[in-house]
Length: 627
Picture 1 (cartoon, rainbow, N blue to C red):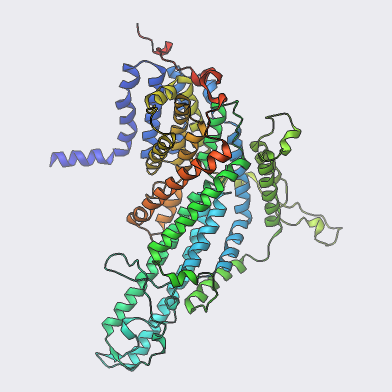
Picture 2 (picture 1 turned 180 degrees about the vertical axis):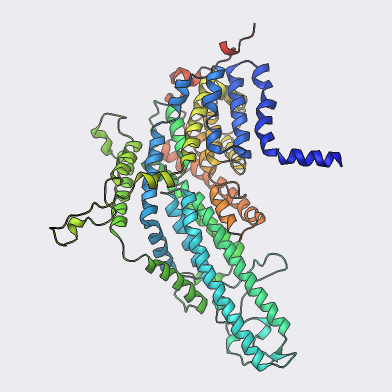
C-alpha cells in the first residue's frame, strides 16, 4: 500500500514536478558543452517542453530568454529586451486593435448573420455558410475570437432545430396514441422511416446510418409521404425511428461545429496579420535577410497566400460534407437550386433572422469601423503592391511600414465617436451637448486585448535572435543539411511535414518561433531560396486540426460538448495531408512564378549577410570557458 500512496502523492504534485524537472534534467547540456550554442539549445528545449506541456502560462515561458541569454553570454539584457518588440509587433498590435473595434461595434456578427441569411439553412448550405464566414473573418480578426463568435450562433440554430424535431416527435406520439390500442398503432411510417415535416424531410440532410458512424447518405423515397396510413407498426419501431433521427441531428451538429475552427485556422493563413506565425516569419526573414529584394508585405502575402487558402477551404468543405453527409449526386446538383424549405429549415432561418433583427439598423459606429477597416486594407495592399509603385514611395525608403499604417488607423479609433455626435442630431442647439464616447477606450482594450499572445509573439523574436547570435541555428542548419542529390522540393516537403506534426501538440506561434530561424540557416547552407524553405512550414504551422489542444479554436469548439477527440482525429488527419499537399504544390508552381524561388539570390549568400547571422560561436563563450 505504501507504493501506490507514494505514487498518488507524486501525481498530486505533477504540475510542480513538470516545472522543476525539465531544467534540472537538461542542465548537463550547457555544463558538458560550455558553448553559447549549447546554452541556446538548452533554452530552446526548455521553452519547447514548457510550451507543449503548458505547465507554465505560454506568455510567462516567453520571458525565459530575458533570464537565460544574459546569464549565459548569448546576448546582453538590453539586446534581448530590444528583440522583444519589432515593427511587425506593432503591426500585430494595430491589427488587433482594429479587430477589437469590429467586435465592440458588432460589425462581425452583422456580417456573419447576413451571409447566413443568404446561403439558407440546408445542411450543406449551412456548413458552407459557416465555413465561408469564418474563413473571411479570421483573415482580419483572430481565429480564437472568430470561433468564439460563430459557435454561439451555431448553437442557437441547432437548439431551435432540435426543439422543432422534439415537437414533431411529441405530436406524432400523441397522434399514434389516439389511433392505437395497447400493443399496436396504425402504420404511419412506411418502411420504418419517419414522415415528419421537421428538418429531416429535407433530402439534403438525410444521411444513412450504419452500426458505428451514421455517416452515409440515406435516400428517402419522395413518394412515401403520399402513401396512406394503413399498416400497423409497433411502438418500438417508432422509438427506433426517433433515435435514428436524433442521431442524424447529432451528426449534423458535430459536422457544423467542427467546420468552424477548421475554417478559422485556414483563413488565418491568407493574410499577413491573420495569425501570429505569419508575422513571426516576416520579422525573422527581415532580420536575417535585411538586403532581400523580396519583401513580405501585406499586399504580396495576400496575393500569394489567399488562393492557396481558398483551395484548402474548398477541399476541406468537400471532405467534411462527404464525411458527415455522404456523397449524393442529386443533392450536389441541387445545391444552388431553390427548393421548398421544410419546417425545420424555416425554423432555423427564423432563428437567424431573429438574431439579425435584434441588432437593429446599422449603427454609426459600425459604419465608421467599416470605413476604417476598408481604408486600412487598401493602405496595406497598395503600400508595396509589387505590380506597381506603392504610395510608400513618397516617403524615404523603408521609413513607412505596414506597422505604421496599423498603428495610425488604430489610433484614430480612439478619437472617432461610437455614436452619432449630438451636434448632428438636429435638436435644440442651445442645450449643452455631452461628448460622445469614442469607438475604442483603454478599459475595453485592456479587457479584450490578448496580451499573452503579444508576449508569446515577442518571446519568439528573442528566441530567434538568440539562436542567430549564439550560432545555434548555423549548427542545426549544418547538422540537418541534406544530401546534394535530394531535390529541393523533397527537402521542403520533409520540413513541412515535420512542422505539421509538431504543431499538432504545440502552440503554432511557438512552433514557428522555434523552426523559422533554423530553416533560414538551412536555406543558406543548402543554397535554396529562403522563402522556398521557410514559407510552407510556417503556413502549415497554423493547420492544426487533429487535437483539441492544438489550437484555442479547437479547444473552444470541443468545450461545447458536441465533439469527441476521435472526431477531430478522424476528420483532421486527412485535412492535414490536404494542407501539406496544397501548400507544396503552390510553392512549387505559383510560388516559384510569383516570388522567383527557383534561383538562390545573392542577398542570401553567407558572405553578404550581417555578421551576427553567419558567425557561429564555435569556440567556448567566455562566460563558459573552463580552465
